[in-house]
Length: 246
Image (tube, rainbow, N blue to C red):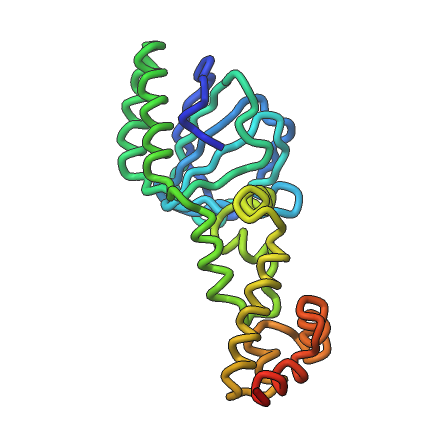
Protein backbone atom coordinates (compact mmCIF):
# COMPACT_ATOMS: atom_id res chain seq x y z
CA UNK A 1 0.00 0.00 0.00
CA UNK A 2 1.43 3.33 -1.12
CA UNK A 3 -0.34 6.29 0.49
CA UNK A 4 1.35 8.65 -1.97
CA UNK A 5 -0.71 7.18 -4.82
CA UNK A 6 -4.13 7.58 -3.18
CA UNK A 7 -6.50 9.83 -5.13
CA UNK A 8 -9.08 11.13 -2.65
CA UNK A 9 -12.54 11.90 -4.09
CA UNK A 10 -13.99 13.44 -0.93
CA UNK A 11 -13.73 13.52 2.84
CA UNK A 12 -17.02 12.12 4.16
CA UNK A 13 -16.60 12.68 7.89
CA UNK A 14 -14.12 13.76 10.56
CA UNK A 15 -14.50 13.18 14.25
CA UNK A 16 -12.50 13.21 17.45
CA UNK A 17 -13.88 10.31 19.44
CA UNK A 18 -13.50 9.53 23.12
CA UNK A 19 -13.06 5.82 23.62
CA UNK A 20 -14.11 4.43 27.00
CA UNK A 21 -12.30 1.33 28.28
CA UNK A 22 -14.34 -1.86 28.30
CA UNK A 23 -16.75 -0.87 25.51
CA UNK A 24 -17.03 -3.27 22.56
CA UNK A 25 -18.43 -2.43 19.12
CA UNK A 26 -18.97 -4.13 15.78
CA UNK A 27 -18.64 -2.64 12.31
CA UNK A 28 -20.34 -4.43 9.43
CA UNK A 29 -19.57 -3.50 5.81
CA UNK A 30 -17.78 -0.23 6.56
CA UNK A 31 -19.32 2.47 4.30
CA UNK A 32 -16.06 4.31 3.52
CA UNK A 33 -12.32 4.18 3.93
CA UNK A 34 -10.93 5.47 7.19
CA UNK A 35 -7.70 6.52 8.84
CA UNK A 36 -7.56 6.47 12.62
CA UNK A 37 -4.88 7.79 14.99
CA UNK A 38 -4.41 7.46 18.71
CA UNK A 39 -3.84 10.55 20.85
CA UNK A 40 -4.21 8.54 24.07
CA UNK A 41 -5.56 5.16 25.15
CA UNK A 42 -5.54 1.80 23.40
CA UNK A 43 -8.02 -0.12 21.26
CA UNK A 44 -7.83 -3.42 19.39
CA UNK A 45 -9.44 -4.13 16.03
CA UNK A 46 -10.33 -7.77 15.36
CA UNK A 47 -10.85 -8.74 11.73
CA UNK A 48 -11.52 -12.47 11.38
CA UNK A 49 -8.68 -14.02 13.43
CA UNK A 50 -6.32 -11.05 13.17
CA UNK A 51 -5.83 -8.49 15.94
CA UNK A 52 -4.49 -5.00 15.19
CA UNK A 53 -3.68 -2.76 18.14
CA UNK A 54 -4.00 1.04 17.87
CA UNK A 55 -1.58 3.04 20.03
CA UNK A 56 0.23 6.40 19.86
CA UNK A 57 2.94 4.82 17.71
CA UNK A 58 0.86 3.81 14.71
CA UNK A 59 -1.82 4.80 12.24
CA UNK A 60 -4.66 2.44 11.35
CA UNK A 61 -6.02 2.25 7.80
CA UNK A 62 -9.60 0.92 7.67
CA UNK A 63 -10.79 -0.56 4.33
CA UNK A 64 -14.14 0.22 2.78
CA UNK A 65 -16.50 -2.77 3.05
CA UNK A 66 -14.61 -4.30 5.99
CA UNK A 67 -16.37 -5.96 8.93
CA UNK A 68 -14.61 -6.09 12.28
CA UNK A 69 -14.91 -5.80 16.06
CA UNK A 70 -13.46 -3.06 18.24
CA UNK A 71 -12.38 -3.69 21.84
CA UNK A 72 -11.63 -0.53 23.81
CA UNK A 73 -8.90 -1.53 26.27
CA UNK A 74 -7.72 1.82 27.63
CA UNK A 75 -9.74 5.07 27.64
CA UNK A 76 -8.50 7.82 25.33
CA UNK A 77 -9.09 9.93 22.23
CA UNK A 78 -9.01 8.55 18.70
CA UNK A 79 -9.30 10.97 15.75
CA UNK A 80 -10.81 9.41 12.61
CA UNK A 81 -10.95 10.66 9.01
CA UNK A 82 -13.42 8.91 6.71
CA UNK A 83 -13.03 9.35 2.96
CA UNK A 84 -13.71 8.02 -0.51
CA UNK A 85 -11.07 7.36 -3.15
CA UNK A 86 -10.83 5.95 -6.67
CA UNK A 87 -9.71 2.43 -5.84
CA UNK A 88 -9.40 -0.09 -3.02
CA UNK A 89 -6.23 0.80 -1.11
CA UNK A 90 -6.14 -2.30 1.11
CA UNK A 91 -8.28 -5.38 1.79
CA UNK A 92 -7.57 -5.74 5.49
CA UNK A 93 -7.10 -3.39 8.42
CA UNK A 94 -3.50 -2.22 8.20
CA UNK A 95 -1.24 -0.71 10.83
CA UNK A 96 1.53 1.71 9.84
CA UNK A 97 4.20 2.67 12.36
CA UNK A 98 4.37 6.46 12.70
CA UNK A 99 4.97 9.17 15.28
CA UNK A 100 1.55 10.83 15.41
CA UNK A 101 2.66 14.18 16.92
CA UNK A 102 2.81 16.14 13.66
CA UNK A 103 -0.16 14.23 12.27
CA UNK A 104 -2.31 15.33 15.23
CA UNK A 105 -1.47 19.00 14.56
CA UNK A 106 -2.56 18.63 10.94
CA UNK A 107 -5.70 16.76 12.01
CA UNK A 108 -6.99 19.66 14.12
CA UNK A 109 -6.32 22.07 11.25
CA UNK A 110 -8.21 19.76 8.93
CA UNK A 111 -11.11 19.38 11.36
CA UNK A 112 -11.53 23.15 11.54
CA UNK A 113 -11.48 23.53 7.74
CA UNK A 114 -13.96 20.67 7.36
CA UNK A 115 -16.38 22.27 9.83
CA UNK A 116 -16.11 25.55 7.90
CA UNK A 117 -16.81 23.62 4.67
CA UNK A 118 -13.50 24.68 3.08
CA UNK A 119 -13.36 21.75 0.66
CA UNK A 120 -10.10 22.50 -1.17
CA UNK A 121 -8.20 23.40 1.99
CA UNK A 122 -9.54 20.27 3.67
CA UNK A 123 -8.33 18.05 0.82
CA UNK A 124 -4.95 19.81 0.81
CA UNK A 125 -4.50 19.19 4.54
CA UNK A 126 -5.61 15.58 4.20
CA UNK A 127 -3.01 14.99 1.49
CA UNK A 128 -0.41 16.49 3.85
CA UNK A 129 -1.48 13.99 6.50
CA UNK A 130 -1.15 11.10 4.03
CA UNK A 131 2.28 12.36 2.98
CA UNK A 132 3.33 12.70 6.62
CA UNK A 133 2.25 9.12 7.34
CA UNK A 134 4.19 7.87 4.33
CA UNK A 135 7.33 9.85 5.26
CA UNK A 136 7.28 8.79 8.91
CA UNK A 137 6.51 5.14 8.27
CA UNK A 138 9.57 2.86 8.21
CA UNK A 139 10.92 2.52 4.69
CA UNK A 140 11.58 -1.16 5.05
CA UNK A 141 9.03 -3.00 7.16
CA UNK A 142 10.40 -6.25 5.80
CA UNK A 143 13.73 -5.57 7.53
CA UNK A 144 11.92 -5.08 10.85
CA UNK A 145 10.10 -8.39 10.40
CA UNK A 146 13.32 -10.24 9.57
CA UNK A 147 15.02 -8.70 12.59
CA UNK A 148 12.19 -9.85 14.86
CA UNK A 149 12.22 -13.39 13.42
CA UNK A 150 16.02 -13.70 13.59
CA UNK A 151 15.93 -12.60 17.22
CA UNK A 152 13.26 -15.16 18.14
CA UNK A 153 14.31 -18.30 16.26
CA UNK A 154 14.59 -20.24 19.53
CA UNK A 155 10.87 -19.66 20.26
CA UNK A 156 9.15 -22.87 19.18
CA UNK A 157 5.77 -21.06 19.27
CA UNK A 158 6.91 -18.48 16.68
CA UNK A 159 4.07 -18.09 14.16
CA UNK A 160 2.65 -15.62 11.65
CA UNK A 161 0.14 -14.46 14.24
CA UNK A 162 2.80 -13.91 16.89
CA UNK A 163 5.02 -11.98 14.44
CA UNK A 164 2.11 -9.87 13.15
CA UNK A 165 0.91 -9.07 16.69
CA UNK A 166 4.42 -8.08 17.79
CA UNK A 167 4.79 -5.65 14.88
CA UNK A 168 1.20 -4.34 14.85
CA UNK A 169 0.46 -5.53 11.32
CA UNK A 170 -2.05 -7.96 9.84
CA UNK A 171 -1.11 -11.53 8.95
CA UNK A 172 -2.17 -10.95 5.34
CA UNK A 173 0.16 -7.93 5.10
CA UNK A 174 2.96 -10.03 6.59
CA UNK A 175 2.39 -12.73 3.97
CA UNK A 176 2.32 -10.19 1.13
CA UNK A 177 5.63 -8.70 2.24
CA UNK A 178 7.29 -12.12 2.28
CA UNK A 179 5.99 -13.08 -1.14
CA UNK A 180 7.15 -9.73 -2.52
CA UNK A 181 10.62 -9.54 -0.94
CA UNK A 182 11.53 -13.17 -0.24
CA UNK A 183 9.52 -14.96 -2.91
CA UNK A 184 8.23 -17.50 -0.42
CA UNK A 185 6.27 -17.88 2.80
CA UNK A 186 7.21 -16.74 6.29
CA UNK A 187 7.29 -20.39 7.34
CA UNK A 188 9.94 -21.19 4.70
CA UNK A 189 12.05 -18.24 5.86
CA UNK A 190 11.89 -19.35 9.50
CA UNK A 191 12.89 -22.91 8.57
CA UNK A 192 15.78 -21.63 6.45
CA UNK A 193 17.13 -19.40 9.23
CA UNK A 194 16.72 -22.10 11.90
CA UNK A 195 18.66 -24.56 9.78
CA UNK A 196 21.40 -22.00 9.11
CA UNK A 197 21.66 -21.58 12.87
CA UNK A 198 21.72 -25.35 13.35
CA UNK A 199 24.59 -25.75 10.86
CA UNK A 200 26.57 -23.12 12.78
CA UNK A 201 25.98 -24.85 16.13
CA UNK A 202 26.81 -28.27 14.69
CA UNK A 203 30.05 -26.85 13.33
CA UNK A 204 31.02 -25.35 16.68
CA UNK A 205 30.79 -28.78 18.37
CA UNK A 206 29.83 -27.18 21.71
CA UNK A 207 26.29 -28.52 21.99
CA UNK A 208 24.62 -31.90 21.70
CA UNK A 209 21.66 -32.50 19.34
CA UNK A 210 19.03 -31.89 22.04
CA UNK A 211 20.58 -28.54 22.98
CA UNK A 212 20.81 -27.46 19.33
CA UNK A 213 17.20 -28.51 18.82
CA UNK A 214 16.12 -26.21 21.68
CA UNK A 215 18.28 -23.28 20.53
CA UNK A 216 16.83 -23.52 17.02
CA UNK A 217 13.18 -23.47 18.12
CA UNK A 218 12.22 -27.11 17.63
CA UNK A 219 9.97 -28.71 20.23
CA UNK A 220 11.74 -32.10 20.08
CA UNK A 221 14.82 -33.74 18.50
CA UNK A 222 12.68 -35.80 16.14
CA UNK A 223 11.07 -32.78 14.42
CA UNK A 224 14.48 -31.08 14.26
CA UNK A 225 16.15 -34.13 12.70
CA UNK A 226 13.34 -34.54 10.17
CA UNK A 227 13.49 -30.86 9.10
CA UNK A 228 17.28 -30.98 8.84
CA UNK A 229 17.30 -34.19 6.80
CA UNK A 230 14.57 -32.90 4.46
CA UNK A 231 16.68 -29.81 3.71
CA UNK A 232 20.20 -31.27 3.72
CA UNK A 233 19.60 -34.94 2.78
CA UNK A 234 21.58 -35.96 5.85
CA UNK A 235 20.73 -36.27 9.54
CA UNK A 236 22.18 -33.66 11.95
CA UNK A 237 24.12 -36.30 13.87
CA UNK A 238 25.78 -37.66 10.71
CA UNK A 239 26.41 -34.11 9.48
CA UNK A 240 28.12 -33.27 12.78
CA UNK A 241 30.32 -36.40 12.63
CA UNK A 242 31.26 -35.70 9.01
CA UNK A 243 32.29 -32.14 9.86
CA UNK A 244 34.51 -33.12 12.77
CA UNK A 245 36.07 -36.16 11.13
CA UNK A 246 37.56 -34.01 8.39
